[in-house]
Image (cartoon, rainbow, N blue to C red):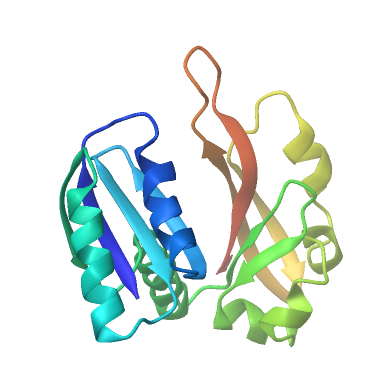
Length: 186
């Protein structure tokens, strides 16, 4: 079950919602908090009476304005949208972490390297693409997008590597958390 709790920004509200779940021995699978005054809870299914009582209790919590069931958590929707986008892309695309290890790969990338996605996760980008030092690039002071011609399996590609940045806290710079690598046949 997934709930969307509409609420005011109040210190301790999330803890109170979690306490309601703990008091009922409800296994929490996930929680997400947005800046828009919403808290999302993902937990195991409940019987109707227990669910009705929980909803009423949540609504009585100070600072809560409404609660409703939802089909998915925001991150689940984003993940599914990203997956659909990757599958639809005809060019090989994969993401890497800061150690240049593959995290995600679309079917075109899997076909190019003749590896399924799980096996690709055991490789670093440098093992898959020769001639570009991904580690040095990701460890540089300011990681900028790169484009370079590469040869993979005897085929020519334009490799575009773009950093993925996580916004910094107030007063801090954005920091790289990985990169997307796209290979365009030339």
